[in-house]
Length: 108
Length: 116
Image 1: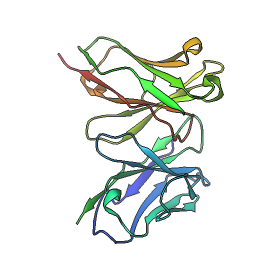
Image 2: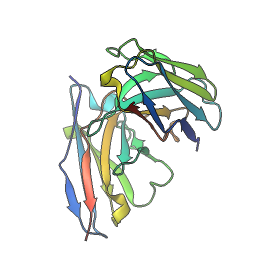
Image 3: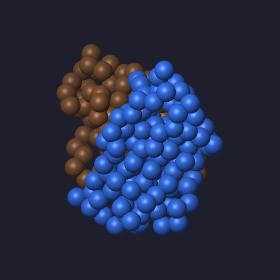
Image 4: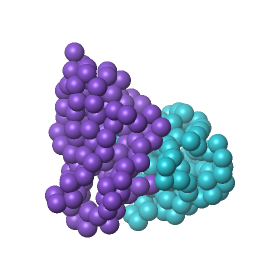
C-alpha cells in the first residue's frame, strides 16, 4: 500500500496567517490526491481533488498543488472557520486508497 | 439532492456482530460505488474499502479482511457493512461515502461501541 505522511501533525496559527500543510506519498501518485477538512463531531468535507481542483463552494483562499510524491494545501489567509483537522487522501489505485494522518490547525 | 443516511449507534459486546446500513437517495444507486471509512475515537480516517454497486464485488483494504463484509440491497439503494467477532478496538465511527476514491458525499456516520 502507498503510505501518506502529513506534516506537521499540529499547527498553531493566527487568524490572517498563511498556512501550508504538506503531504508526502511513499511512491508516485501522479495528481491523484484529495484534501478534506474535518471539524469536531462533523463529517469530513472534500476541499480539493486531483491535487489542485477546488470543489464547488470552497473558498478561494484554499489551494492545492503538487504532483508525484509531494503535495501542499495552502490557506492564504486563515479564517476563524478554518480551525479544523485536514487530511490528504491518495487514490492512485482502487485497491489501495489511503489517508494521511491528519494535521490539526489550532488557534495561536 | 444526494443523501446517504446511515443506521443508528450500536453498543455491542466483544465477540458479537454488527451490521451498519447506508441508504442512498437523490441519484441512481448503481451509478456509483460505495466506500467505507473508519475513524476510531480521537484518531484519523482509515479507508476500509469499497463495493461495486453494479456487480456487488467488494474490495477490502489491508487490515479489513476476514471480519469485515460489504454487501448491498440494490432494491432499496442500501449498502451494508457487517463486522463480526467484534473487539474493543473496533469501537469507532463508521462512515459510508459515495464513490470508490475521493468523495464529496458522506453518510453521517454510525458509532459502534464494543464494550463488555
